Length: 459
Image 1 (spheres, rainbow, N blue to C red):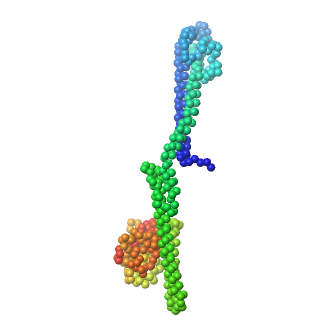
Image 2 (tube, helix red, strand yellow; image 1 turned 60 degrees about the horizontal axis):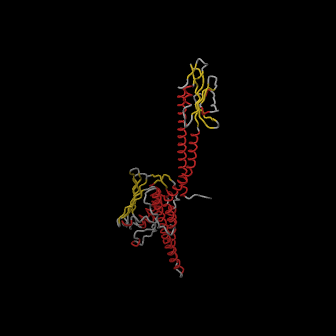
């Protein structure tokens, strides 16, 4: 299918609107000149009528004969460049006299209803405009005065003007199209540059950016928007690559440990106690691997924005108590003292499952990073129309430089300092994504060896 280039489409659309405007202008010009010419002819005819009315007399003693001797004397001695045709009829609509330029011709008398009106007609097959003026004596019509003027010159002027406009119209459009095409070509040069730059950008080359035009116009905004889009795409691709790399590493570690344990187990016969010990260790690694896969799937679901919310009334007190029950064995193992202060029953409208994930991850981290015989405090309060949940521990804390990084997937703050603490570094990343999804304000305050406090502000 044939299609115009963008440059030609711009020029063509410009010509359509300009052509419509020019046609309206030409039409108005033609109508103005046509009105002006016809008005001029009408004025000339009217002037001739008034002049001739002054030169005639009505003889009441001779059956209302119209005396035109004075007119005849002047008419026969006058030379007109554009001759006026004049004739007189008597009371019986019979010819009394006429101007010599009529020769053997005669102006036609029309119905009396057309008296004092301009009539376009023909004389000897040539266009004329005439007027028939009734002559009165004591309010009685006693004859008619006819004045006519040739329309040849007017017709020629209007015909030439119309032909000129018809010829000029397409020529003007052609010239304007070429000019518009040239201007459009220069105007869309940045678009061609955008296309050229975009064609060089691939998944392996996301560094190129479009050069911003000097003028901060629509094309500047378009170029900047595309550059911003490329920045987001590049960051997303880099995050995906990093996520894939980290996920592969995190999955490979428990699998390697599990494989090594089983290989050692089958090298030689073992006692019942050794088999049980290695199998239990393998089961713990499988559980760790299973938990990691669940977290990865959950994080991937948020990355693809496929999580649908189920908003309902959530009893926050019960949800926290259920979470503490879930982690009771770990709490008892580390002999952590958990204090919770609920001055009232707190309800929120949110997704119960997602809120439970947030609370579970925060509580799990508080237990994981608490010292033996440590303490965890959980407070619920209301302030400025928001429900505030504060979970604090007095554990190892987080370095100030790491506070901005702990939300990145798989990032763990100084894991080498505490090799006994296992984890994937996904928990806080998941918490942050869910908090953003539920419009929950999420804040962490921490100090090394003093502990951490997580504050949730729920609308």
